[in-house]
Image (cartoon, rainbow, N blue to C red; front, side, top):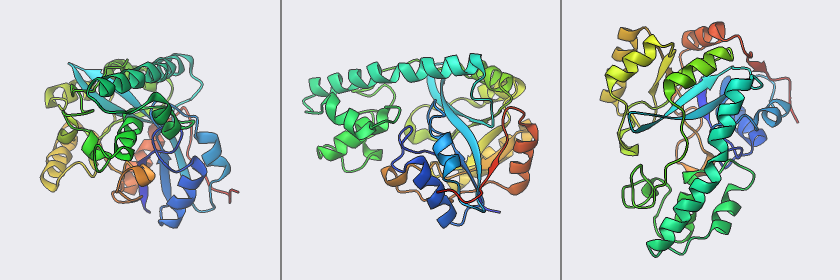
Length: 285
């Protein structure tokens, strides 16, 4: 089985619609794909309706968190999307995205970059607006060659010249909320140093004690030595080690299935989840 547990659609900052994403996942030879848009589950219904036969969908979301001044993401799988406490927190995070993006536009204008809110809103479309949409605007204007080049201290990296803070959930609270909604929690790209400061290992140990289920070990932002170190940490802490592409369509160069999760680990994730269950494809439209 080929299992990719971290992808994004136009419901957040990917460029594939949810329907296109599941069709592309099937064409890429995946057996299981997780749709984990940022702080939203809005793409799930469309993905389920279009799910090809032979492909299983894992519903999820990537939650924006911050601990000790460090931004981090928590992948939440197979939770009840209507559970009130987790739903309220996701809405709080999502609602803060628009004023944050407007603030980044204003800061870029102060730096002499002629980006407009209308341009960013057009790029975001119906998706939950975020830094990648602002980064895409910088690419359109020729300020940077790629989206990744916008995530530097010069521009949009945490603490960068045009960075603006947003509401982010304490990860210990996020773990509690996801568990309360019957879900499973995996720390996304925990050692992606190029994105900024990373969470210290003692804090990861505390998160494991608080109910964290796993670490996303195999990821494009982790080199081989880092993956080996994280795999050892996961084993030491009794955490699951997952792998995934973090696919964003054409917004990033990584392809679906670039990294995958061991079937036994996937089976354990589904065993632990009680809020929702994987959806087998029946031949969508």
